[in-house]
Length: 575
Image 1 (cartoon, rainbow, N blue to C red):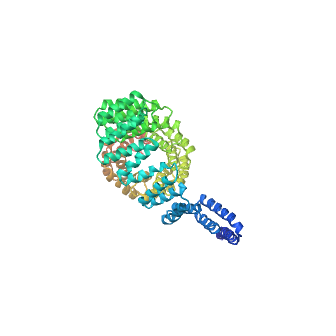
Image 2 (image 1 turned 60 degrees about the vertical axis):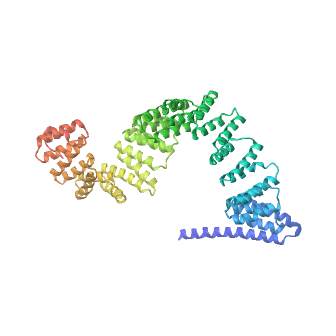
């Protein structure tokens, strides 16, 4: 009841506030209408100012109301039409916007902003003919507005009206001088119309106009290469590098040209010079390394990308991204321990990169660095306390250290952050199930496994561990058999799954079948647990001498039960 009253009161107050504001506005407008002639101009100014305030705040309906009131009080004017048209343009009501913008230009033909709005509306309607007329009139009416030739040129260019576009670009160059963007547009038009020689001349004329600007020479070299003028491109780039030996873009382009023309040695030489230069942008280097990582792996590429990555960290030793990409290269080459070290350096330089933390924790786990999993996950949680994945790793670490109580505490907390993600919920439940089992809280362990299998009935980890734990307890063996058999058939060469299925069969006293699957498992693994299980099964089948041999072998391998010594000493099975 209290909740209902609260909602009712809140709704009432909100409605009251809105009605009150509306009433105030209506009262204000009534005052406008009753105002004397001498007051109307002042009130119109006030209404316009209020309209502008609401426009700036994005409250367009109120802004339009105030502008309309201002118009009624003091008559129509260009500014009112302009701002009204602008509102409708921003609301994408182009027909209405056009009416007001057209009127603004009619009422004041000397304001460039009115022309610009009108032209933009026509462009929005794809009425480029009218947009061109507006820009041309703007240039004719407003002094020093030649910059709008750029818009005219763009329209002609995209309409593929090549002659008019070239004429317009000539006008721009006469006023503002030559520039790279306009030269490139003119080159493109000449290429479209089949005049390569004219396109070449455009680039050469730009270089003549600005002989000290190497950017234009590099651009012309790129143009040469794209148009199969490779010798000219190389000559141009080599001349640039004589002037500026550290010009990274020229070296990168030269390397690319050599690479594409099959001169690998010179390509590598040019590229290494770029990577050894600390002034070259790090992101440019990283993009090149990523390109190598995504390319087809060859021995040359493998050695090349490693060399480039090493050069990158030498040139940028204090940049986290440099060490991170070095780690990526090492990971790709299977050097996980070295990659882990590189990622550690990277995270020490920047601990605010979430993806980097996940990479570190993933490698901690793969490399079985239990203490690191705990230390790194707790360090990461200081920066990312709301990231469920980091809680999951933290719980995993404590579970691996056999601190099951702490693991459960962490995992239950982290599970709250998993939200509606079924995958994340399952990951937490799997870990919880394992830890609850070790604390002999079997009901909670089973419930967690059941939750996982409800979402994903084929979850390998859940099927294996649940069935194995049931076999150890000698409970629900039919269910354990169904689950473990599913995995054994799905993965006939996986020793862990074969061992689990065999151990379920063993608990069901089906020793012959258990022996068959254990022998299959042994062909794939020398794990001590599997060998011990095999010895137990042989003992049950009366092959006691062979059983003893397997127990001794299992002891040497490790990962056995705490009964292994007693079995060997007494030459007898203990369970």
